[in-house]
Amino acid sequence: MNTGRERYRRAASTAVMNMVAQIVQMATGLISVPLALAYVGPERFGIWMTLSTALAFITFSDFGVGIGMQDRMSRHAGKGDYRGARNAFYSAFALVGIIVILVGMIACLALPRLELASLFSLRSAEGQADIGPTALATTAVITLGLLGGLVQRAFNAVQEGFWVAVLQVAARFFSLALLFVVVRFQLGLPALVFVVGGLASCVLLLAGIPLLLYRNKWLRLRRQEIFEAIDLESVKGLLSVGAMGLGASVAIYLVNNSIPVLISSKYGAEAVADFAVLMKLLAIPGMLLAYVLSPLWPAIAEANQKSDARWIRGAYRKCSTACFGVAIISSVVILLGAPFIIRHWTGAAEIVPSSHLVVASIVFMVLGFWNSAASIVLNGLSRFKGQASYGLLLAAGAVLAAAFIPGSFPKEYVVWAINIGFAFRCILMQFEINGSFAELSRRSATYLQRS
Image (tube, rainbow, N blue to C red; front, side, top):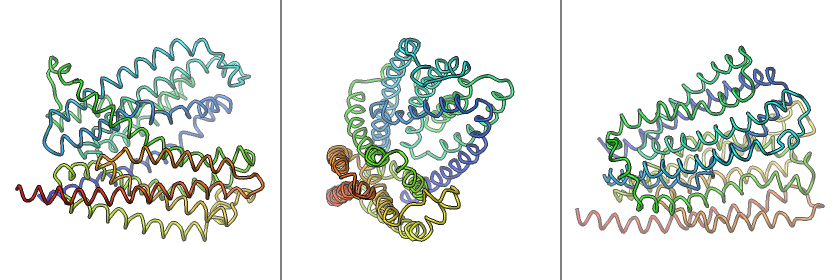
């Protein structure tokens, strides 16, 4: 079988199933949100939504171990070093297991001592009674998410992300069914939080791990071999790569999430509404594109280990073409239709954005597409250091520049300030890709000569 075609086949099947999983998530969300709101009421629903913001920190709270594991598993498996890939897998679980235990201990010790009811200004007896158990349930969801994230990255590393999406679809339906049980038997807000937020991770752990071991027999270990698989060399590799990957993730997180905070601080919270609604619209093509591109990361990592420069260049051309096509179509649709769509979607004419804000936001979206294509290639080539170093510097510089924009200027100037830093990031990433391709071509030529 053609190796290049097999890489594309696996990436395509994962991308399609990812989109199916997202559609199912959106559909079940449309049902679960009003059902949960009617059950717990506005105050306790607000508790849930506020605590749910803590779930965003799952991305960072494993200190990059998940990114490091995926990178090292992809690299080792790509060159047939299954022992190294297996050691990376078990070492990552050991490290994250320690983090989970520490987070659980801190939560159990600290949360009962905090005046959470006063912190959330809770008035009802139900809300005051639920806040403590709900905070603990949210902590459980976070810790399960850390472990479930490792399972997902392990599937991605061996180019079998398709199965993660299948399990997520099953988990969504199971979660919706259990939500009706929670409401029917009045099991309370903590149970609701766990069912909606933590069940997917439970499915990944309870069904995903056996499936992963079944499909990849080289991951199986006898009981006495487990501690041998957790070696110091793998731990060092996970932490070194993970630290760079974490830095890259923090850098793009700053770029993507700083604008609303800056606008709110300079112009007031009400000034964020039109930009926030517009960004929800702009996020749709970006989200779909991410599902298409993300399965190529492990495929590129595997091709890199085989010095298949031609395939990697071809994959990047396809990524760039897809991004360019989506950028053109999305930009035209949003430029011409955003006011109409937002007015009829929200029913609030006062949050229809100005044409200047629409243009600035479209540029931000297009830069996001460029960043997505470039980062997939650099991640696959294990090039995290640049994204972390210049990425953090440029993100911090752009945020700082935006913070000094006078309040008398229109708020789209804040978006343009972030856009400038974002553009420099993308340009530097492109230079890094070009240099990596030149190096890869030399390595590929040497590999062919030896063969």
